[in-house]
Image (cartoon, rainbow, N blue to C red; front, side):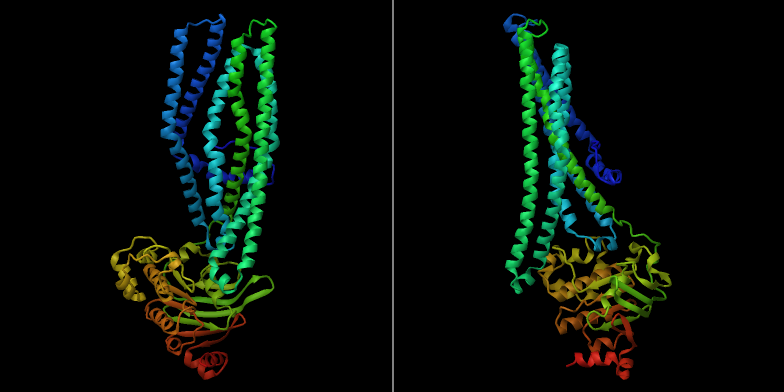
Length: 584
């Protein structure tokens, strides 16, 4: 159910097609609720028209020209009030249900479309756009489109009935009324596009403001330790002022629309009233005193949609603009395309002549070559910025903009569906995200697993002590604030173990841990027999590195040396220098 509104910007047809499924979600399995609210609107319109007709007949009865008795008019009045009461009961049951279900389905659809995006598509975007779309923009859509929808349809029905009565009473006076009605229509045309642009500007600036708040809260400790409160406060005030300016302009346009509609409606009402009075005073038998009064009464229903439509038109167009903006963002690189890959590694992971750069002309990886036979444990070591974490990210299909080859059992990664790749590989990162839920939910990621499998993951990751002390229903706090760094890392290991992916990547997982906890976490990973493990570590612990199948020492984006710990120490090359320095 989409109101056809003209769009003048480039790509209007494409945007309209993108937003159509979003609009459908507002009405999916919700049409009966909407239909009942329309029945209510029709009954209310009928009751109001009966009241208007009664006013004329009562005035004519008083003046001696009426055609109905007092008793008949009283009975009809009762019928009209009964229609209005029935309309109120139907509205009470179905109107709130329609609105709530519309917004619930819309949010669910948007959230699922968001989850459908691939890592490659999402990682390059500003998440504030989606935060704003699911909070500020959703409220705007409900307020400016969904909530007024029944009212605009009801007033349109009343308009049609009132126009019919007016034509019945006096076609000439009706034509004059239509002429006066052109003024409010012009108002809606003039202000509609301005309102859309103003609403989009508010949405854009709120998106930036939300992003700034998110960054502030995430980096709160850094702000305090750097004593940057005043600078951040100034940034906040600038963003806040930008939002206020856009909101002020939007409100101003809304005020202009409201007053312009009201003034043009007053011109219509007074103009028709004076014309009707002049026709009645001139002796026109088709226009009685009751007719003049009922025309003024019926004009309320003629004015209703004329006055409401400019505001609704502007609100609906603004809402469609917000939906189109979101639809464009969600449609960017949605699919993780590629062929499925088997969830097993029988041969090796091969990296051949791998080149990669985040920015053109600034290479991060420069001809990396590595062979990682299945079932082994491999460590990537090197100085900061040598490309260790970038290699792991590329192995996790974070980007396809690399040159060279990455192959899993001979299958080039660019041809693999990332969705199926994640059945083969898992990653444990330095910054483990922990939900504000129970330990069990954070291990299972809110999915159902047999108890014995969860217990196995808990045992192998070293979480048994934590479970004994706090219980698996212990709430972890916001982003794991109730847990230590080592406990969060063990939860991350347990997640990977529970998924039973045969390949496990570990990216600086112990960087923020003390030496003892770091050793315990890496020791737990090294004990995972049957897994292919690739560990990026800054901690050159001899007890850990000696147990690795192979070491790859990176320097300036390339593999400078490779071999076992003993081999590399005997060579006394780059790795030897790194290790020696780390022991001081």
